[in-house]
Each structure stands twice: as structure tokens, then as C-alpha cells.
Length: 213
Image 1 (cartoon, one colour):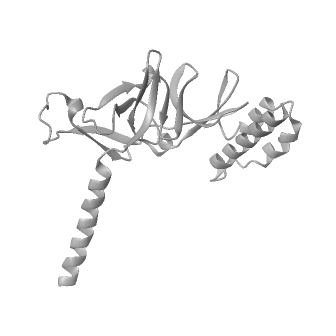
Image 2: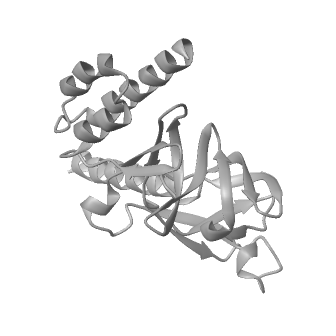
Image 3: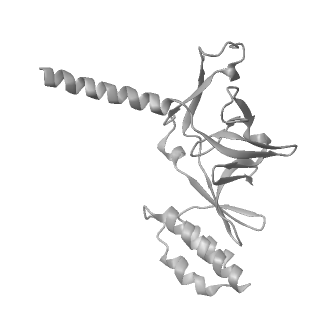
């Protein structure tokens, strides 16, 4: 009986510890660039950004500021670079995966639900932004919306990667590089590893193009 009680206590303690560990947002050093300003700051880390960006000016600040992605031209979060990309009239903040003759970007919706809780150690509780910021992962959106969407850009042309059409689209973009057409045919869009393999393909093409141009 004692062993059984100890087992449940261990499970409960581990659960509580994990919950507390994951509650508070992780801020990554970064930079937000708008039309008017460049802000060096610490930004709430997320797998993607689709609405509001939460940040603070120093890592020790209590006050948390916010910016709408419509105001942002580009952003750095840790080592990740984000740029505003317009596709079919819609503006997205996309992560740059590869830059070159053909650039590759990824768009993913925010995976965290952001909310504030009162910080009892802080006296000024009139401003919601002066309260602790916590996140809850796995925001309730459909699994299809959680999947990252890939976009390729050449000059001013933005193309959403559709697995059923991507080989044809790539051959059109690389019409004067027939040597790459066999490599395009070797791509397997239905493969579980397609996204990483596709990134490698685009990066290798850009390296070849830069070397031979």
C-alpha cells in the first residue's frame, strides 16, 4: 500500500513540476523592425507567429509590450529570421529557411495560447502588461492548421508549395537549368521527410547558382 501511495505521489509531483516548468514563457533575444523603428528586445519564443508578438526591452523587465504582425516588416528571434511576405493579398510573418536565387520560407500559426496572470510580487497591477505572461502549448486548432506551410520566392513571385504541383513549378522556375530536372523528379512529396529534403534541395540549388553565376 505504501509503495502504491508513493507511486501516485511521484506521478503527481512530476506532473506539477512539468506544468510549472512549462507555464512561463521563454523569451529569446531578438529584434523587431517596423517601418518607423528597430527594436532590440526579448521576444516570446514560438514555433510560428500569426497575430500578436509579445516582447520586453530587457530580459529582466516586468513590463511586457506587444506588437501586431501587421506593423512588423521583419524580425529576429534567437537565430531565426522572419520576414513579412504577401501572398494573394494576405500578409504573413514567415520564417526564412533558405535565401538565394530561390528563397524558401515557412509559415506556421502560433502554437501557444497567451494569457496574463497577476504577479503578487509587483505592486502596480493596474496595467495588464505589467503582469506575468504565461503560455499554454497546443492551442486548440485543427491538425491541418498546425502543419507548417512552405513558400518559395523567386524575384517577386511567391508560390505556395503544393505537393501535387511542386515538381512542375520547380521545373518552370529552373527552366534554364535542365541538369536539376532529374533531381526534381527524385523528390518524394509524399515522404514524411519531404520538408527537410526540399529545404536541402533548394539550398543546394542556391549554392550551385551562386557558384556558377
